[in-house]
Image (tube, rainbow, N blue to C red; front, side, top):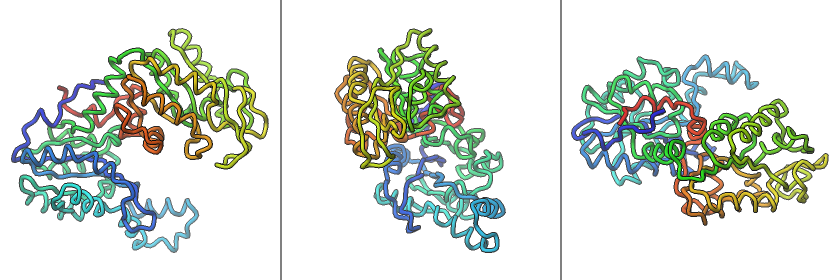
Length: 426
């Protein structure tokens, strides 16, 4: 995939309407009050929005929020499958489920951060959005309602994409800045590029520069640290990084599948037995490529999956029955920290253990601390690894923390990202 894409600075936006795809999929209180509990994704969009407004553009921002079901019949079917009584599934309840995923709280918070009024459309491509977009002046910003309220959004329906593009008019521009959604070919992430010149915002440009640069032309040695629970979700990443990395480090729950594949005892640890052959294939591939593949040599085990469980350290492959591995052990911590000490570039995706439990966060914290002290370019994949460095207080010591979990994973797999592929090449 070509990582060299035109950015918002490569096009003239003065006096034009810009359809800007953001990632405002922010967490909110579960009581339906609409109170945003973390506005990081809104803040991340500010540089691109402020630049466009300063350049005299009229900004029509759009985003998804959650997973609403825009079709009443399908909603009834899904709720019935969850065990709900069909007789109680009224259209009013369906509309209420949608109302909980309105972007109105985002418009309010965005306005507070920008220090200016953010208009809110009552729909996505309907009459209210059309009227407000048509009346929008340079330096003003409009936020459309949740894109997933449109049935054609997730299907990348051409009519939906065209209607979105039409909001920006004949001289409009499409700016993609929602890295967390670029791995999906939706109407608002990819389809609109068929009707408007499409460029990246600053957020996506940064992701392409750092992750794309690390994959295409890394400062060596390149060390990849891969954790998380399942081999099945990371096999593509491991496979691709074995083509380009100098060292690949395996931690987290998926390490026990590798251990079992080598004939080790893993007790009650997380194990994907149907992926053991793949784990062995990766070990053989590393040997054939001359890549160091580091696996845990000891592990912290517990007698229950609980924050206060009894624990002890055992050698890898020697976990007793009734015990489960929840973190890498002290010898493994030293091995892994030594491996990153002289790296040129480090890519980290996935924690080393159950970092949500303080007792089993030591491996993850030690790796984060080691990365904070290295002179290497340090790139943290989105999702749990990003949450871990934030929670442990090392975020400001990392070169780049990705804003996309699934997107950064697919990026590292070498997959084409539809929301990036559709942008104009530089």
